[in-house]
Image (cartoon, rainbow, N blue to C red; front, top):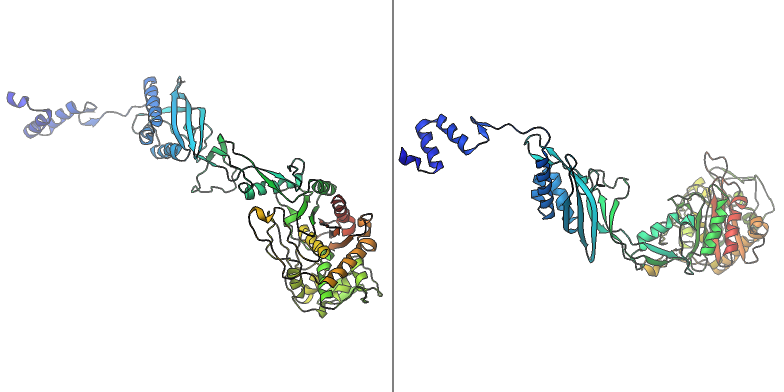
Length: 544
């Protein structure tokens, strides 16, 4: 037996189990596992962690994190999976190349610590310093002192579900300038509040800008509800401010200022001005300063301003001529009964007079003389409406559906399913002034090599001349005369009053040109276009 006592402990255990059975085993277990008493595990520690445990746990956790050992650091927390993901992401998604963590003096179970992180993203490097803290708690099942894991341990501004991510901004900042190099900003030109951010998104890089690099608190893309209307990720540290680009637009600061002033007197109005010979947009203004740009994106019936397109179709097809008699009765029927806005009539009118006085019934009386779809074809093939306009910003291209019966007749006077924006109607006036369609644009196509829309054909020279004479008659002795007074000789105009269901007053429309500048405006529920939208267009034309 003395000989057996000299054998290693494992041998003793084997010998004793063989000799004495279970009781001998328990005796050895007590020797080899001091935490076990009579074959039972020692009780799990409870109660708050001691000062020594708090200090030791905090230091071991911070040392492991600092060393880049995310797995070891996570094991010292009460949520290993979440901590592993966050601490791994700190290196990989936040691009922290090196970090120094210095614990401060504990206040109870809370341990503050300072962070000095070296962020490296592409060619950009930056030192990021901030303060954070952790809390040490007792593990409910293990009894160990552990870090109570929260995203705020990594950074105090991180909320649940957020992670750190370092990346370049979606687009660099830009300085947008007008055609003469004058800087444009939303403070001086409030109607550009939606346009300028869009220009940044589309042309930041083409304009020579360098995006900023920052560390942000972001919701992972794969997380449920990510990008579901939440606020932009919080920027926690700027690694590089980037460099703004410079983008030249077609806008004219003076014309833009005039347009802003012109719509300011209305609770709801929109206007667009452009160069007739090129399509360059000179001004875009709306009374309502919202993200929806009605001047470019509005889709409403244009009323009698559409008669410009209808007149072009009738003149081309030989169904009317400026000096040819075309009576203006109070009512006309084509599928349904139509009337004039003022209930007026003129039995001895000519086609030019009907146009200048905006007689609905005269135009309706010719509906049966033109094929179905003829107006839609004229709108698209000559005026470029409905083609894919690429203006450089979001815009509506206009819509003139081919229709039959009363729908065809309604379209001839800008009602029914016809939809336009002020941009579209400014372009219509510009096409008449120049004789050919030039797709409007706010940023030159050379900036991003985009192709502008092209209409299949121009207006026949004789028809263009007839339309200009009819629009001049409207501007000098027709429904547009009051608004266009004093603007000179090279002018043209067309008014419109578009009726809308369940609306007390029609929308007021006006489009016209002066020299090489064309403009159009709409005033919802403005009533007669010459009185409501006309002064707005005239003010813009005067500035242009």
